[in-house]
Image (cartoon, rainbow, N blue to C red; front, side, top):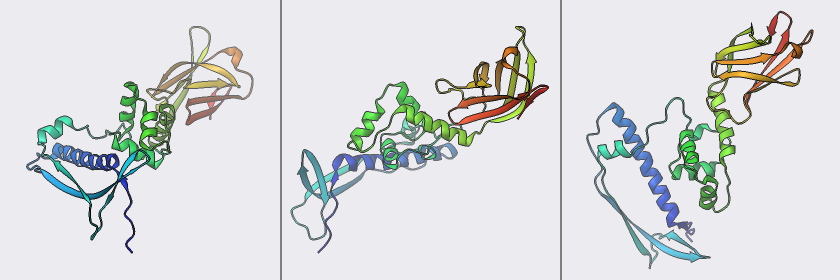
Length: 259
């Protein structure tokens, strides 16, 4: 006896179909950068023969197998689109300073799948949704029927971790400079030292276990104010947490900083 076909929701089918069409459109948009599109897919239509099933308030469908009788027919027709429409309505390809959804580790596969179905393919897409105050957690819960949860704070941590993986902080030089107020400034220069948009409370520093003041924090330069009362004879451990995933540890001794 033939195995029964798995049932599916019309919404899930439409989501999957639209997702595949979006991927095809994005491919054409990217290809249009290197060469003009000289053809277009004309109207496409297809029919599905299915058995509707109404169970506990949800309408599902099962595809008819060969020899099944009494199936219902659902017809779909897709229209054509011009290269100009593709260019005007497609999202720009992911840039080098952005992250694709697949590059962000720690997001459940089911969540990634549902995010892609609503058009989220990169970290920048998530930032745009947050700026529009979209309740992404409610969207994901609804689409996964409560199986998965997500929030912007958790996603931001995962994005920062992924970005750190692509751009590890590097210290190229450290200098001590006198300030007009009698304090010394430890100046760190390098690359990827502080993110352009840092999580709340970062970057931060502690000297001998006591919070130290950061007077400047940029990707290429971090400045930490050091008061004479904070420095002691011998070893002075300094910790600089650039974000939750990157921490610099230094040991300041008489004569200058030493890692």
